[in-house]
Length: 248
Image 1 (cartoon, rainbow, N blue to C red):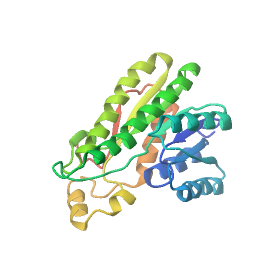
Image 2: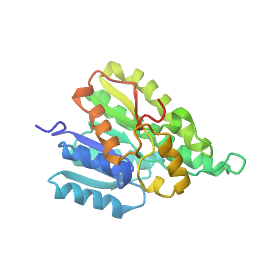
Image 3: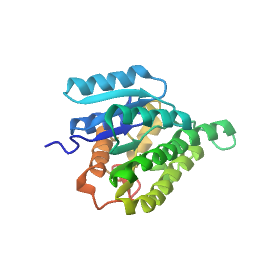
């Protein structure tokens, strides 16, 4: 029997990259998947089509998850479609890299809004649902940059470190209601976000990874699926680093 049969999962930023891989993995294990997107409907619908082609169930729902009204409407639509929510994966994120002396305040603010505020808003909405049923799993996608830092990414590192603190605090709040909250910290993963890096930066990154390769989105998706499953029923408040050993 599939691990997530009869369960509903919402993945923010689910149309491409790591988000898409998570959607495919959860659907492949039986979940009804809601693929959230902000502006790129084509990639979200493509993910839904890929899931349907494999015999899974998914829908795409538009929402800016950094906006409270957008989050309220999104969760209302999820409940209307599937009657509940069992798994939330907060994956939506952006970068606006620059050294601090050249970084504009608006570039700091938009990264916090998209990466951290959206996570907080969606956690709050999911908590209401999951606390009532005394069950559920929230997985927040952070980054090794939130653990180790990275030059030129003070805004991104702050948002991702914030997600770790948010996850630990929320895990303590929700544990009495049997709702688990964990984080996954990817290292360098081959996605659109890393495709723009120079060959020099990629070579430097590979040199720092003991396993000697970039991560694949599926590596992250399988870690998320594990934390969402009953196999991880005694795990909460943890950050699972999936980075090929880079920051150990």
